[in-house]
Amino acid sequence: MSDVASSEPETLTDEAILQRFLRTKNQPTGSQTLGFRMVGVSQATKSVEVEFDAKAELLLNPMKQIQGGFLCAMLDEAMSVACMVASGMTAVAPTLEMKTSFLRPGQPGKIKAIGKVVKWGRQVAFTEGELYDAEGRLLAKATGTAIPTPFANYKK
Figure 1: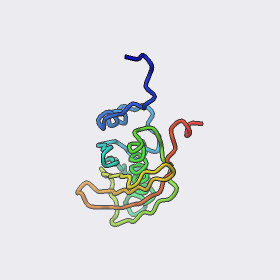
Figure 2: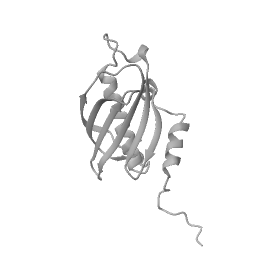
Figure 3: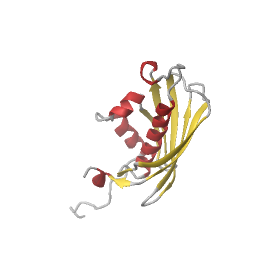
Figure 4: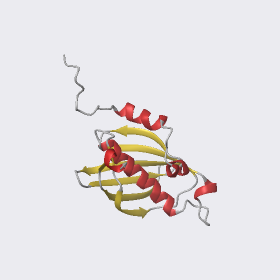
């Protein structure tokens, strides 16, 4: 048996990735504002389930509905985190472009998001996202294009 460390990156289980998100002490302020909480991870399907706590005092427009930009941010967050999962937690994937369709107004409270990577390549990732209200009704859908960037390159 060799004492030499393997050059292969550690493979994390879905549960280990979920726990990493749940235990983080460095959650970005944007995620905090949106009330981000990871609920589920599937590396096999390159998807995540996220819950947002949409607070009325922060996110509402004059019509007492969640402002559309915040719904876009929730979709972007779910799709971006799905990219991190698809990379085996070795990369981020900044969004290059995103298209959102709003299907019904969002109200304060719990909002579920599903983020998925449709195709993961060396230079581009294609993503999809959906938002659901507390009753399970589809609020908004998005597609996006992102650029996979290893964590090491991102921090430079």
